[in-house]
Amino acid sequence: MTAHGKAVRMLVLTCFMWALSFPTIKALAMLQSAAVPDAGSWLFSAATMGARFSLAAMITAAGAMVLRGGLRVVRSELVQGAGIGVFSGLGMLLQVDGLAHTQASTSAFLTQGTVLFIPLVKWVWQRQRPGALEGACCLLALVGIAVLAQFDWGTFRIGRGEAETLAGAALFTGHILMLEAPVFRSNDAVKVSVVMFAVIAALCIPLTFLIGPGAGGAWRSFSSPSSWCLLAVLVGPCTLLAYLWMNHWQPRVSAITAGLIYCLEPVFTSLVALVLPGWLSELTGVGYANETITRTLLIGGGLILAANVLMIAGTKPPAALNEHGV
Image (tube, rainbow, N blue to C red):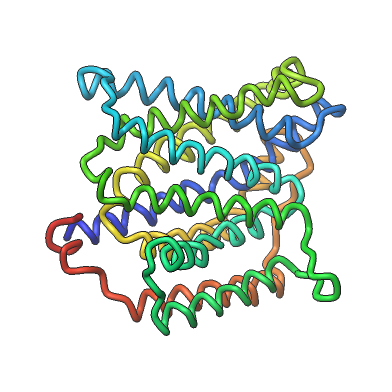
């Protein structure tokens, strides 16, 4: 298998790991709300993100010291790690809070707004105008997102959860494009991930002191053993595996290809959300019912997936990616 083919396979597995996070975060937020009823979703978002990425940073740093013989980070790794940390940290804060106001599968689909933002940014910033196929697929995906988000066409407004998720998707675009930048090609993905995780934690932890009822409420939100079990799922497969794989393998494909691959995430999330919420309800005792496949989900999600299938079918990876993996 070529380096490009292996990268595609690993990024598909990354999408599956991310899919586990959507129902898990929603179940954790419900558990936290029951434990600290006087707090809002923003506190739970900051607390969850702070704990998740603090633990991930410590575990990855320890692993780097063992596997790499130290944790010396060069300037390029520091810049890239800090950049993707800011983009992903702010994006996930919006995404996690948005999950409290929409369904897990809807959030996962709207996160794929990156497939629209990536070619748009490359057009404006790098003067790389999208081709006819890319433009048509983006338009088709845009219609799918509009259907899925249930736009109120009378007022051109969408709900809080959907709006926050789309804003988060715009920020995730920065992460994807920074991994594509040739100037960072020689960076060590493990060390970059340590910086990324630490920056995200540094963004989130101070918020727990500023949002009522403060750090005490954030700590109480993890007062049950079940909450720590859910956090372990978020730290392990959803963070350590998913982001280490993303940061290592994505530079071996183009940003547009990566954006298309990441559209598999909502497919996995929709499947996971059919069964995982019920299991999590048994574990935590919260009332989180399994989701069902609705007509809106089928139509909106189907249009988004169709746009990506057309793009993949009509796009060939650059020869350099096939032969050299870069």
